[in-house]
Amino acid sequence: MPVGRRYTFAIVGAALVWGSGASAQDSASVRSAERRAAAESAVELPTAPVTVDGVTLFRVRGISSYPAERRAAEIANRIADVAGDRTIPVDSLTVQDTPTASIVVAKGQRLFGVLDADAELEGLTRQLVAQAYRDRVAEAITEFRRDREASTLWKDFYRAAIATVAVLLLVELDRRTLRRVRAAVASRYRSKVQDVRFRTLEIVRGEQLWNVGQHAVRVVAVLVALVAGYVYLNYVLVLFPWTRALGRSLTSILLQPLKTLATGFLAFIPDLVFLVILTLITRWALRLVRLFFARVASGETEVRGFEADWAKPTERIVRFALIAMALVIAYPYIPGSGSEAFKGIGVVVGLMFSLGSASVIGNLVAGLGIAFRRAFRVGDRIRIGDTIGEVTQVELLTTYLRSPKNEQIVIPNSLILNNEVVNYSALVRSGAGLIVHTNVGIGYETPWRQVEAMLIQAARRTPGIRAEPEPFVLQRSLGDFAVNYEINAYTDEPRRILGTYSDLHRNILDVFNEYGVQIMTPAYEGDPEQAKVVPRDQWFTSPAALPTAIPERVVETPMAAGPANIALATRRDGETVPPQTAGKS
Image (tube, helix red, strand yellow):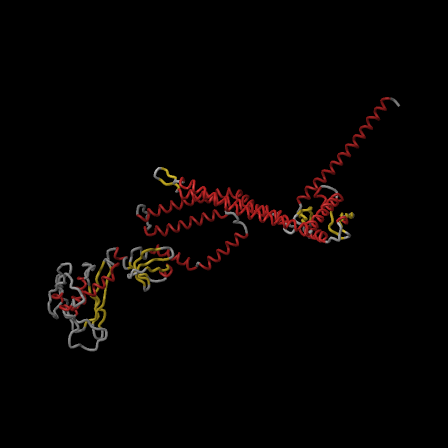
């Protein structure tokens, strides 16, 4: 064969050998990559750990009809049952391979099966995974039986007792050390702790600084005791097989809440910044509203068509609207606002508020209505139903009155809104004055002109009665035995209206006694032999005290003269009252 042809066959053969080797390597790498991809995809699927005595042996997969958690629990129970039966030797654990699964059995009792899907978790073949699981279960059964032997349990009990005594001694040592440290620090540094001042301004008191230091020492002692307690619990719980799972998860149990809080707080920081900025803006807006309406109420700022008395209730409405709007804006940024629990609590609170606050809402609306109605203001003398008093305070829910007996009366605003309000001070402020009036019954034998003149004279003697407009008398009715007269007089002092009435009644009695005119009793049967009047010389019979000045009069004896003569008298203030012109009969 020529040399060139031999070289040609050699090159072709080498190429074929290299190509077959390269394709074998490629196919092997592809299969390895496929196994890795299958393992990675399997890891993403839900799995559950098989745990015995707090030790995780391996993890298994599940399906929708047979979840991984249920499968893992059943496998763990079977292993625990075999481990508790000492008649089953550990060497009896074998792996039986079938076309669909590799089954681990113990003395003919099936424990669990390893599927191809389980093997994909480890990225190995099913047979290798089943053998590894069998060895791990054998170790777990051996440890399970050894931990429950009497000798082992007694050793663990002694260790737990020693640990208990040690932790008690440590806590007692910690308590005594804390006491000695506090005593030593107090004796050495207590007198040196002084107030922190900046010139004459006291910033922090020395007593407060000392208390902070004492609390810091106490916190350190408490932390030492807590760490000792944690180490003790973890050690004792791990000793015994029944509590070993709790002991090994104690760290995660204690740290998981802190981790959750820390993670949640870090995630909440952007929302927290937004809420802080919203709070600052809302506070600034509320302060601006308060300053504006304060100027309106004081009269410094005038708004056309807006009364100064409306400033306070309007400010409350605007403040409520601003706060409500801020809460609506802030709600999505509150942690947990989107959870079902938060929504449920909101529904319950809203239901409780709607059922239990109907009267509160009614009083609130009534308070705003009262403010805008301007029915009264602070300082007015008013009557609401049968209650009379001076307004001392008007709130959104209630109104406070001070009665003439100096009693504080609290009236719900809804009651005020549903009742008539008599204001004794409203027209006094406008200059019209308040009319005080009282009735007397005088017999028909006394001239009505004389009676009217005497009543007007008594009104003029009364302190607090205005000279203008002049008092006037009305004949209200002609009764069976007497004529009922009503004296009316103007006053500018509604706050002392009771005193004014009392003075008016006194003066009526004095004037009628001066002129010998008898005031009829309510039940009249006949004229007495002697008139029922009090003579002047008996006005101050003991224990009455004689005043420094007695009202002067012109007529000394009873007479049935006309009002022109009777009206000529001197008032207490020394002013001479001109005679009145007699009217026609």
